[in-house]
Amino acid sequence: MNKEKEYLKQISELQMKVKELELKENNFKKVEKELNSVNQLLSETGSMAKVGGWEIDLKTGKVIWSDETKKIHEVEADYLPSVEQAIEFFYGESKSIITTAVDKAIKKGIGYDLELEIITKNGNIKNVHSIGSPLFKNGKCIRLNGTFQDITQRKKLEQTIIKTRDFLNETEKIGRIGGWQFNPLTLKQTWSDEIFRILEYDNFDQTPEVPKGIEFIDPEFRLEASKAIEEAVTKGKEYDFVWKVNTVKGNSKWVRSLGKCEIENGKVVNVHGSFQDITEQRIAEEELKSLNQQLKANEQQLRASNEQIRASEQQLRAANQQLEASDQLLRSINYELIASQEQIVKSKERSESYLNIVAEIVLSLNTKANITLINDSGAEFLGLPKADIISKNWFENFVP
Image (cartoon, rainbow, N blue to C red; front, side, top):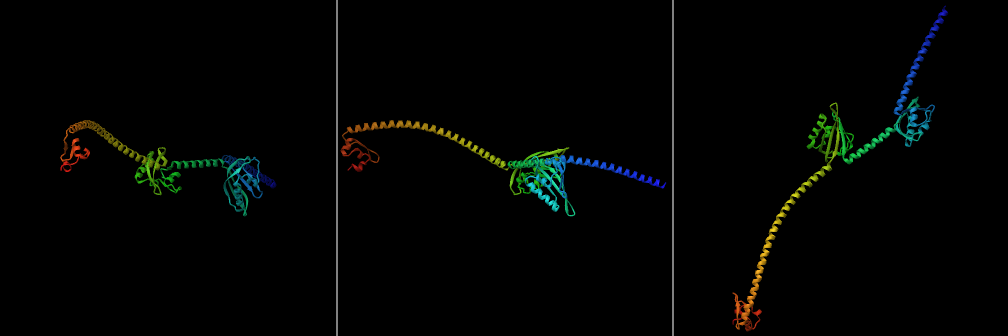
C-alpha cells in the first residue's frame, strides 16, 4: 500500500515535470518565433538603410558577415571571408586606414568610426561607413564586431550639395548678393557668406541677432529699416529698400534689401530675403546724375551762346547792310571825286595853255608866298625847270 502510494507520488511528480517541460518548450518556441521575427525586422531594416553587421572571432579567426554586408560587397550569400580577404576589399588609402584602425582596436581596445571606400567583387567603387568595437576578456581582445553601411548615395548627394553651395557662393560673389532669414519669435538670424563679406564681418560663425544687425544700417536710414522689419514680423508686409550701411571696418556702402514673409495659420513664422551691395551702381548713378546736370548746364550755356550768335548775326547783317550802303556812297563820292579831278586837271591844263601863250611871267602864290603855278615863259625867264620853282618862296628866292 505504501509502495503504491509512493509510485503514484512519483508518477504525479513525473507528470508535473512533463507539464513543466511542455510549458518550457512552448515558451522556447514562442521566444524563438519572436526572435526570428526580430531578426527578420532587423534584416529588413538593415536592407532598407543598407546597413549590415560583421564580427571577427579572434580565437578562431572566423569572420561573419550579415546578408546586407554581403550585398554591399556584391558577393555570394554563402561567402565567408578571412580577415585578410575582408581588408582587401578596401580601396586606395582606405586599405591602410582600416588596417591601422583594426590593429589599434585589437591591441589597445580603441574602437573606430570611419568613412572609407571599397571596391566590390564586381569592380564597383562604393563609399561605406564602418564602425568597429572591440570586446576584451581578461585583458585580451576576444571579439571585434560592428556595422557596415553603404553611404554611396549620401556621398554623391553631399558632393552635389557642396558643388551647389560653391556655385551659389561664387554667384553671390559675382552678383555681390547674399541671403538671410530670421525667426520672428527669437530674432535669431542666419546670413550667407556674402553678407559677411559685404559688411566686412569676419566672424562667419557668429551671425548677430536682428537688433544687432540693424546697427550696421546708417542712422539716416535706421528708423526706416526698423519699421520695415517690424511690419514684416507683425503684419507680414514685404519690403524693398535701398539703404546706406557702415561696415565693421568703417567703410560706407549702399545696399538693396528685400524682405519676404512665410505665413502659417495667419502668423509670420519666418522672414527671409536678399542683401545686395549696389555701391558701384549707386556711384555710377550719382556720376550719371552729375553728368546729366552738367550736360543740362552746358545745354543752357549753348542755348545762351546760340542766342548771342543769332544776335551777333543780326548785328553783323545790319553792319553789312550799313557797309554796303557806305560802300555805295563811297563809290558815288569816288566817282564824283574822279570827275572833279578830271575836271580840275582839264582846267589846269587849259589854264597852263593860256599862260604859256602870254610872254610874261605869270605865277600863283599861296598864303605863305610859295609858288604853286608858273607859266613856261616865267620858268624860261628864271632859267630853271618848273619842278625846281614850284613850292619855293617867291620873295626869298627870286625877288632881289
